[in-house]
Image 1 (tube, helix red, strand yellow):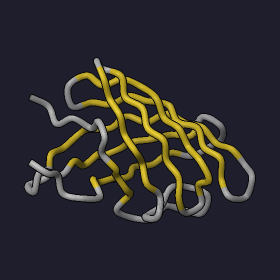
Image 2 (cartoon, helix red, strand yellow):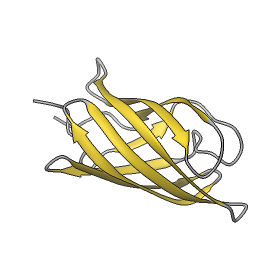
Image 3 (cartoon, rainbow, N blue to C red):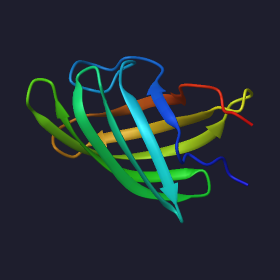
Image 4 (cartoon, rainbow, N blue to C red):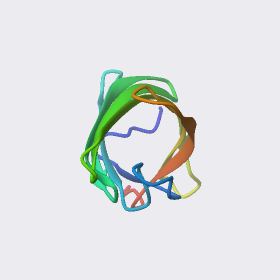
Length: 116
């Protein structure tokens, strides 16, 4: 059975460039019946939302965010869900901006160990 993201809080393991998510950003994930969504904020992000789908260990979603400088940005991301040895969730992400130039990779991990 695949690791569920529903109710998990994840954070980036490294900072990106200014105006993007960073180690102070927190993502509150939800999923149900193949749909995934999350709200996020922290660091340079005032508020962000993502919504998409999950098929097996693959997430495919779009995101939109408001930055602390008042600008907005949107993009597309494809992630692979990995279960870490300690049972936490990790997302290995490939993303690209749709609101401007740029693309990259990132990793987010569950902030706290799961309770079993």
